[in-house]
Image 1 (spheres, rainbow, N blue to C red):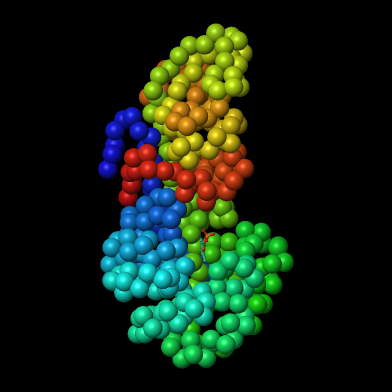
Image 2: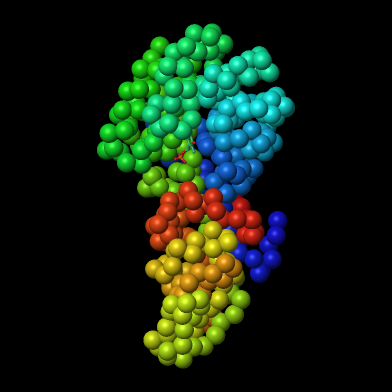
Length: 348
Ligand SMILES: *Cc1c(COP(=O)(O)O)cnc(C)c1O
């Protein structure tokens, strides 16, 4: 792990992660799995999965078979690792070697699975209205007898609008999912983080949150999991009227001290964030001024008594969702675009 002073540092609090999983688990009377796709939303699939497995998670989910291999290495034999993309051409060896469970999306995938891995566990993914992944009602009706006879380990679907509790789509998808699955013997799953908060009729046999584990909305009570510290490269003095950064977008209205920190939009701190956010020296907020550039951010530290060595941009005061709001996006995108230049540290 690179812990050089000169790189931005991303610190992942594994206790907060475990606590968020327990809190989500306590919201329902059913089992709670964990979605760890995209390298656990950018936080490291290995340490995240390992921590959650120790907490008791028995069902993990990733987007692609390649991601599943890393999760299997972290959690060892036993827990189910579901693959949302199903059984794609070329996946067979990975599925077999790492005991991954494809979530079948089409009749074609079902055929492929039966031919390539006839005795290997699989699940079924249904489209209940999102029109993204899964078997449509007519295809499912045709496949159902054959699939059910082979004991799928889960029959699942995904909600399109679960972050808006009053959206009529939630009830509509619930109805469709029920119509498609009532009477199946396999365990059923519909809810991700959002669905966990929609009430027990959405919980079925297990929930499978992602973003809420990592401290993001729509889990409003989540503990912050990630902190990001940016090293200060230099601090300079500006006179009234001097400008900062590309486009001269910030003008000093008082004699100012400006710190330049080592991170930028190439590190997931989107250029669209613009002004309106702070960095923190301890509890003292210091506003970001001027445009965010590829590798650098400029900060007004005039009100600090001393030049800081580093400034924190993500913490319990300013969350992933605050940065997302400033950038006009969602917490998911902020987390997953924090690239490889950060050194990553884990607090247990
Ligand atoms: C990403 C994903 C999840 C997790 O969603 P969150 O909103 O992060 O909780 C669950 N199920 C499926 C099918 C997904 O693609």
